[in-house]
Image (cartoon, rainbow, N blue to C red):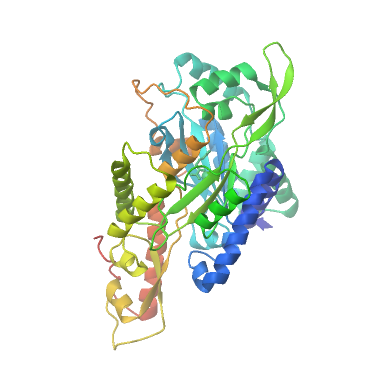
Length: 468
Ligand code: OOG
Ligand code: NI
């Protein structure tokens, strides 16, 4: 029996091999990321593995896919469900992006501590909101609906195997092989001709809409390795002649613990695609939609930590409003802002309740009786804290990644009312609960506190520090 964990790890490997043949620059990115990771490991030793073992980090990827309809989204949920990946978080890129990105998104990923440690493969999945009048008028919505309703992204056999795997916790060897083959094929770039006039019409509204609804199939948009020093990687890729986008998205490089997520990408590459012209001719041309991205992950932050991050991002925008600055200058201003406001040690992040940690007994018994509060247990040395890695995404960075790779801004009529499509609506589409990332981190932390309480024989719950 191949269980869901093994299916997930195998799928991540196969997708990576497939994507590497389609987009060779991705292989360069993976090579450079691994080179940088080896160097960081040599330089920092065990500290380099504070946010995940080197084996985890080396295998770690996230993918991005885009679908057109609720029915397609529900099928994606079944396929990932087979691999122990569940929808976490709601992202509204319609709001986060200034150009035309008419999608809402979630990320499919493992939710348990042990599953995350075994293989944290996650896929950022976006769905078109065709009923949003800022982007699509009634006529275009109707024609999009017809086009998308007539295509079939996933063969029935793949969905049948997915449902069985999820119900039974895995598949036998032969069926696992069949499932993995079909699942990987479903995300290959298709050679089926794309209607030029249809694609172009959608592209005027939004390149993302064209990439999703202009073609009869789906594909991986990018696959992202994890790197331990993203600034070093950025420089090295540029030296290898690969043009990166202007900046690293997310928190600045600064003198303190890595928080949340920093990401950067190289620009979309021209890839050969087959088009059908209006006169029926089938021609080779190219499209620029797929790109390479890399990310560095930091510690997951609490709602208070996130509010601080958002506040500092807004302060940065305000400080630089109307100025033309380079990415470097922007980074320097951001780092200054951070150094003024964000604690520079993990211990202060714990006591300020700004980030998530798990807690572990040290074996030491420095006094006759342990205190019942976390701050006391840490200060007296009964307990140590280990950071919980951020497993999710950032809407603003995601919007930045989408936007930096669009061929045009498209058109968004901000005078029209948008369609209501919140987290509840997305959960209905998925037909399963949409997990709240904060609840997942908090429950991993809570489980560690229960272990500590039992190990120290405390008779009361351990009190967390209050948010500062
Ligand atoms: C997804 C963009 C978001 C990320 O890492 O934030 C994303 C897409 O381009 O489809 O992948
Ligand atoms: Ni991405």
